[in-house]
Amino acid sequence: MISKEFFKNVDDVAEEWELSREQVLEAFSQGMIAGCKKAHDVRSCRVEIKEEKNEILVYTQHLVVEAYSIDVDKTYTQMLLEDAKKINSRVKVGTVLEQKIDPKDFGLFAVRDFKSRLHETLTTMKKENLYQHFKAYENEMLNARVIDVADDHYRLDIGKDLTTLLPKKEALPKDNFHVGDHIRVYVSDVELKTKWPKVFVSRTHPSLIIRLLENLIPEIKDGTIEVMGISRDAGDRSKIGVKSNEPKVDPIGACVGEGGSRIREIVKALSDEKIDLFRWSDNERELIANALQPAQVIAVTQLNPKEKTAMAIVPDDQLSLAIGKLGQNVKLAVQACGWSIDIKSETMAENEGILY
Image 1: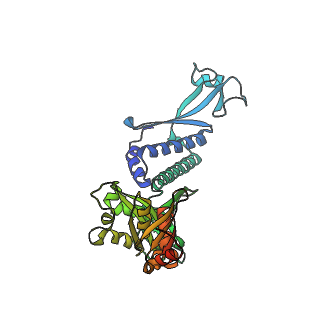
Image 2: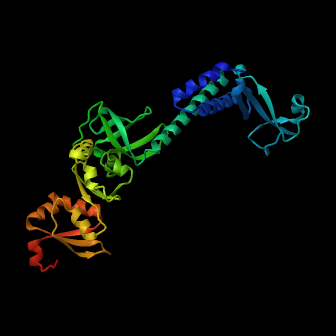
Image 3: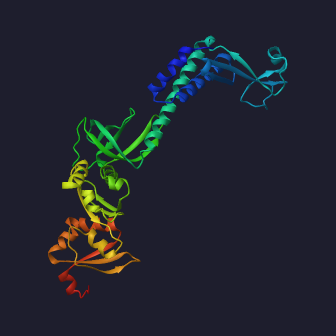
C-alpha cells in the first residue's frame, strides 16, 4: 500500500503526542498488525514500512504443517502443506508462509481493532516517556505553577500536561499560595501508575535547600563550595555547614552574596524560613563551635571521637542562645555536624569541676 499522505502526517502525530517519529511508526505497525489479525483471522502478521518509497507492506503469516497439531508453535495459525503449495509451490513444512494483503480491504471490526491498538500503543508510549522524563527529576528541584487550592492540598502544573498534588503537610507553614503562583518543589518519588505517572513533591524535604543553593549559587553548583551538613525545621529554621575547596573563596560570603542578595533569594523561595550558615571544619572543636552559632563558644571539651560526643562551654549569657527556643539551635547543630553536644555555661562548668 502506497500512502504519501500518511508519511506527511507522522511528524504531526509525533508532535501532538510528544513522541519520536520512530515511536509513531512503531505504534502504527502495532495497530496495523491488530487490524490484520482481525481481518484475516490469523494469529500473526508482519508490517514493513518503507519510508523512502512511501510504502506500507502488510503480510499475514501461517505456519505450514503436514497435518493440524496442538504441539506446534502457537504463535502462528497453521496451514496445511497442500493449501500452502497453491500459494507457493516451493514451500516446505515448517516454513512461515507470508501473504501480502491490502489494509484498504479491512472491514469495520478490523478498522476498529486497528484504531484501538494504535491509540493504546500511543498512550502507553506517551506514559512511558512521561515517566522517564519525570524520573530524571527524582531527588531534584522542579518549578511548578499553582492551578488550584484546596483545604488540604495545592494542585500543581508541572509541565508536559501533567499535574500533581502538593499536600499541605508537605508545604511550609508560611506557604500561602494562590492560583497562578510559580513555586519550587522537591521531587521525592516518581511512580508509574496504571493511567499516568505519579509525581510526589515536597517543600519540607531538607534536600530542597541544597537544590536551591545549587541553583542560585554558582560556586556550589561547580563544586568550589560544598554543602557538608544540613538540618532543618521546615518552615522555621535550617542550619547548613559549608566548606570551600578554593582557599581564596569564602564559603559563607559566597552563599550570602553581595548585600545578602543570594541568601535572600533562598529565604524568599522558602517563604521566609531562616537560614543559619556555618563554616565546616575538619577540626572537631572548631566544627562543633561553628555549628552552635550564632552563640559564642568558649571551649569544646570531653571529645569522644568513637561515640561522637562532646561538651561545649558557653558564656552564661549565651546559654539560652546556644540551646535555642525549645532546644532548636542545639538540635539543628547536632543534626548538621553529626556530633552529640552537651552544653554547659561557664558557671555550670565551674560548679561541676569541669576543666577546659
